[in-house]
Image (cartoon, rainbow, N blue to C red; front, side, top):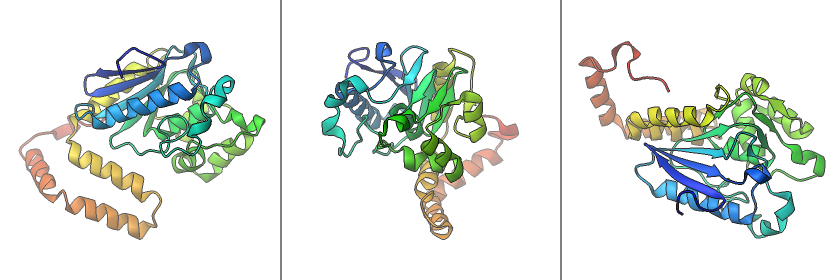
Length: 258
């Protein structure tokens, strides 16, 4: 998919892939062609070894994504049972870290798309909610499963059952938003975070990320066993890293944090 063409733009920015839903006239709502383009963008990211993190955003500052395009639902009908997910890639697991850069409305399926990401950077105007509740439309892009894993069952049930829209301050208190930035700075900050993530040794970063994501649904004993299994496989890398630290690299927390 060529950068800058169609309803979704796929661009490389340093070590990051930047995917932009480009339908601002529809608050970046997703119709069938947009969902297909999002799936294509995900596949491009997954096979691009130089792209170590994915940033997902919406064009403009009014909306990240308002969910499915209600004026074009007929174009999404064939995707309801798709393995990749109705809105592009929401039923797929990313092999590398992902960040949502959110400004404005982040609603319904758009909220579920943001929940698909590992981290969420938000501008002060960001608003989150499952507004499909008022129309009797179910959540089918992962929201019922991912939100409890991020904010806990009680807060997830509040948002799922009530359909209320929360502002960025409440979202940050919930632990839903990773960081709030100045207006217009959400994409730049997400890209900076992606570059910081890309600078770390990737094998162990991806292994530890896998332990967190796969261990979340396991009993503690099984989760610890998974962590140990993945850690043992990287014992040699750990020894190399420890030797670099002993030699003076990374002292005083140098090179840490995103």
